[in-house]
Amino acid sequence: MSCQEEDYRKLVYFVLLNSCSHKDIGLLYGKAGLSISLFETSHFLRDEQIENYAFDLIQQALV
Image (cartoon, rainbow, N blue to C red; front, top):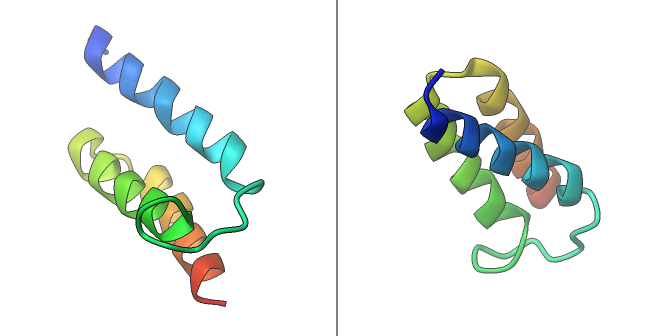
């Protein structure tokens, strides 16, 4: 794993740990924006688990 991938994974885990505390659902400051970022990162890292987390987060935003 490259240093860049490791840095991305650290950021993903930080986002996941703090996503439950977000009350806003918007694209700019909320769960929808976080989920889009996670979708892009999952595509870059080719990690299906991150994609699943992103899908769960967008579902929370839509509820």
